[in-house]
Structures are given as C-alpha cells and as structure tokens.
Image (cartoon, rainbow, N blue to C red; front, side, top):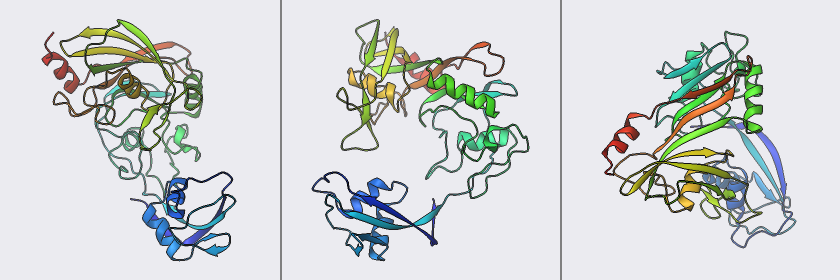
Length: 327
C-alpha cells in the first residue's frame, strides 16, 4: 500500500465553477477529485483543519455551493519501490528494440495499489536486467538504451494494456525510439489487433460492426458503459464468428479503437457478454475469468519497418472450456 508523508504538505486550491449536485458533501467531492487519496484520509485532513472552504475550516458534511473555494493541504504519497522479480515469461519474439510476451491470465500488467509485485513490469525489469526502482519512481537500467531510463515513463516501455484476467499478446519497447514509434502506431490506429472471445448465446450474424460510444458508468465509477451520442468517446469493434456451439459462440474481435473494457462492454451491449465476465455479464462454471484472449498483433517494426504479425495460442483454460462445449 502507499504510505503518506504528513511532514511534506502541498496546498491545492479548487474553485467550484459549476452547479454541484445536492448530495456533494465536501469529503465526497474531494474523494472524487483526488482519487489517489482515500475518503478516510480526506476526512482525517478535514478533521485536522487542513481543508478550508472560503478560508474557513469546514466539516466533512458541508454541502458545496457554486463559487466555493476549497484549499487542501495535501500530504505526499510515497509509492512502494518497484523491484525486479524473476518471474517466468512466455516470450514470443525479442530483439534489441522490442519484446513481445504471451501474458497469462491472472497477471497484472502495471503496478498499482494492491499490486506492486508479481506484475508484468516486475518480470520485465528482471528479464531486461534493470536495477530496482528508487522511491521517486525512476528506473535506472544497466543498459543505457532501455526506455525506462526516461523519468517521465514510469513503466518499462509497455505501450498498450490488457486487463488482469485477459490473456495474450502484449508488446514492450526496449528503447526510446521503439517506444515513440509504437506509441505513434497505436495512436494512429495502424496496429491491427485480433482477440478471441467466447461469448454467451448463439450470435446471429456471421460478422458485424459494433459502433457505440463508451464512457464511465454514471453510478458505478469502476465500470464502463455505452453512452449516448456526444456523451462518450467513439468506439468501434468488428467481429466475425469462428464457431457456434449449442449455447455459446467463439468470436474473433478486431477493435478499431482502444477504449477501456471496449470489447467486454460492446459484446455485452448486444446481448452476448463474454463467458466468465462477472463485471459485465455473470459468473460461469466454464471459466474462472473472462474468456478473452489477445490472439494476434500486426504492426510495423519500429526500426526495420518490416511488417510483423505475431500470435499467441489460446491458453489452456480457454482451450479446455471450448473443447467441452457441445455443438
């Protein structure tokens, strides 16, 4: 867990410029605005007089109004030191510029609260021979070309994400040049991604495009939801049926955009949630996690400019689940 340094306080000021909902207490608003700080800590800061509204001490239950000025004395957050860990990696391809991994399910990619060890980043630090990370978040490599030497980059060159329970192919850069080039390819959407998804129900169309904007769920902030036009960010997913079973369908899904939880939300929105996705569907005895696998990645090598297509076979849990299904 993060540690709090109360000896180093930094003043931060917010001015309420728009109407606040009736239920926005001071502590609730600050917890939403300052997401690195827990509500318990926010309430403690208020109790200690380190939060003022319009230059006066306020209670946690104070209801915010238009034009209120909030001043908070924020303590520093000390994040745990990142360490290199000897964790086996299933490496699909590697050269002096990039490393491509077949990530197993149940592996977190980036360290964060509650998951500072056992992540793909910890494994890459060891694999690429990187020194442990000091408390300021910098990574000092023995090799001078490794991307994480740049203090602005917290993680070692990983330029895209996979959910913890999504398995499959993920690429990391080993140099600044490779990181910049791959980031540009993702930004311009020239990288092609193919996922395999086992979904609930028998999908009617052999292929289709799901064009639905996505944004944060209005009440459950950890979830993503389909939003009305103009409210969310544009999101597009194309799918093709690979095989139909009695009550399930195996799909290839090609996301055209890369929004958070995009494939999971899009498929659930058409009535075919991914098997085992408890967040957007329901738990399923077939699989203990969502049946989503990053199967294939087509991209241009950041230095040689060669077009590369790399793939990762289905992991055993998904493979076994599919083999059990009656046709």
